[in-house]
Length: 474
Image 1 (cartoon, one colour):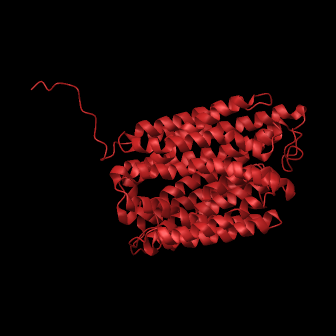
Image 2 (cartoon, one colour):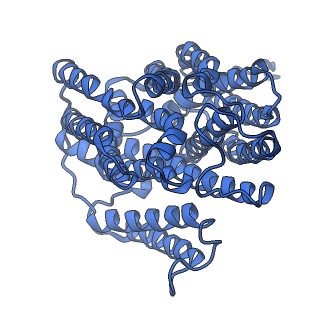
Image 3 (cartoon, one colour):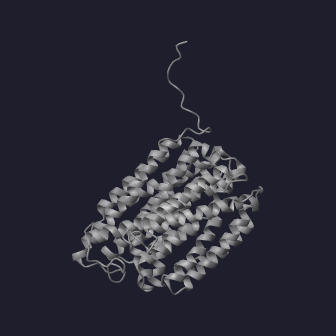
């Protein structure tokens, strides 16, 4: 539900903007608000799962998420939709760390990769179900149904979780409320500054507050937060000792770039598909079919490899392939490209997804102590969502900048084209598609940072080094 709801809104973005008569920047906050509310509490919700049990926290989050989904569908303004999405994100933040914590605490390190592979395959299925289901619902019933659909699913999931998910041992933890406040302030200032920077021409938002000052303030608060975590006498929100595990630290760097890239790629691509190619939401989402199918099919096979092969080999291949696929996609995003020319890089991205999600998750959690399973899962999912939030904000700013440069006479605040499913006039379609293609270069480049991190992975204890073929002279 969480992953579907992230991808499903990307498909609906142009329709929501038109129906609610708002700007691109405002409707982007429908996604950014969800991601922000999702990311900020993850650190503490992981700890809450250790304290009260992952099953209890999961059911609480599922209830909040389901009710907020109903609210999203009933709202009639973009402002209330953003508020409802905040509560939906809070529900998602309660659920997500519990899934990784249950896997970490249930499966031994020697075969945890296979379990994480199923976890990763779910992401592959979600990338298919979200856009396709979203397109069908938008074209037949209206964008509100992309949220209403969560209600019956949420009720069924609540029953199944109540009956089938085991109740695990709890651990007593104190909670660093000062750290929660500092991390929330830092995250909001940085993301809001990046998101709104282009709108205010990177100058003053009010008489005394400027965009650069807000971002710098957020970075300062982030530094204070890290210092506070190192000095706090009670249990810190983020136990910095957990980063002594080299692979855990590097996996967090890599998954941040993955979260950034996947989120940042979706928005400019769907704008290109619907406004340049004139496709409906459903037909635009069909471009993602090869990506989702290959990701879901390959994920279990890759999971078995993770338990036997050095993680550096698997994850480096995935990140390099992901970056290459996005560079390729950017090259093919022209008004005259054939459908198969778009499908090929999408298929390559599906291969990359299978080699990124589950191997990184398994590598990050492999050596975590069971008592810190919730904390580790919270940190890992937080960094992933931080990447997604910054990806949404960063690509929004880049899209506005490229549209301004390529089409200086275009009113980007109100949209570029007419109704969804109608092509832009040829006079501006070429420059508009160029702006979207140039925006995809951002996530393609960011994945290269993750590749560098993956190349530095150490061999985990459960993977034996290859035997030397050299003959001992003695």
